[in-house]
Length: 199
Image 1 (tube, rainbow, N blue to C red):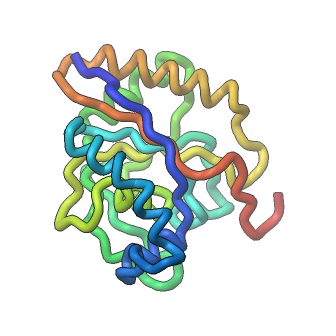
Image 2 (cartoon, helix red, strand yellow):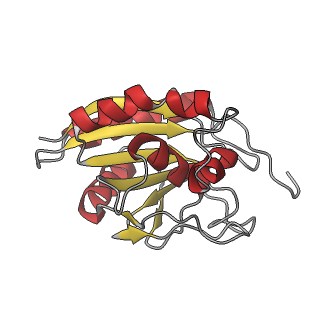
Image 3 (cartoon, rainbow, N blue to C red):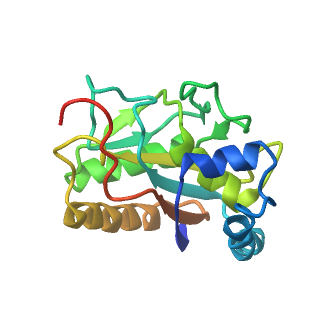
């Protein structure tokens, strides 16, 4: 049986990703930020998760204003880093878990969550910055990732209560999965990301 073993929350400020990519993590300005993640990097090494369900928000990198899903579940085998206007971040492709994602999709629909299923999805700093903070510079990410994009960019946005209910449904779905997996839930970003354009 799969089990959720940890929940982690972090910022995904794009400037953190830029500092990481440019080798500036030990600059006086950035050192306190990166030093603060040393304990969680050690925690991740000890815990060795198989899959991370990573709740983040897309910043109009993969989902433009013509399509704004409330909850979008990444079901692909892999996800490329998005080009956010200055080229993709120099980080590995994110490997997915389409079998577990398919199970989650089915269970969540049964639980009356009408998920948008993304069989192609480029992931931006909202997802890749947390991976860098938790795992450092690597040739490939040591976990499979299921992206869960939550709309906090354009109104109407889901309520905190609805997000809580979705979390409970995800927990039930993970526990119902027969494979022996160590699953973590990560949450990144803030409660509001108003982007340019009409509300």
